[in-house]
Length: 117
Image (tube, rainbow, N blue to C red; front, side, top):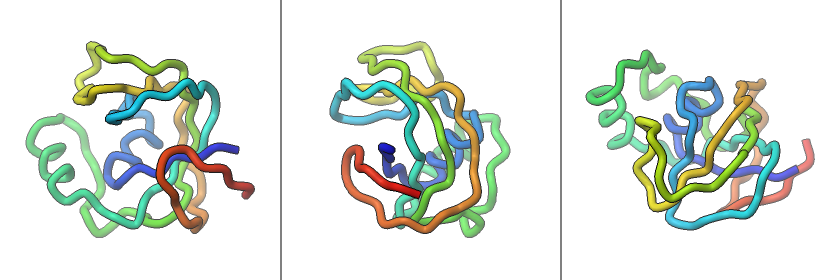
């Protein structure tokens, strides 16, 4: 199955059904279910941005799982504009049916990549 590596805390927000779009500088034709992979890199600036600009309760910066699968979700479209408060990018992957799953350490890769767990 495909996986997409996303930096924390963004990956957590998607896996918990809070963030409904993933912003990228590249488009995709992929549609369907994928694993949400939390990269080893934590986005500290993004964490502060979320705390300042969104009315969501998120874990403390040291409480996130890094370097593995944390959830499943479905990409239903790739757009260049959207009314979601989470859309900032050149492209947005519209996400549905997101859910957190038990952490499974897996090495990430760029773009979509295949894993078997």
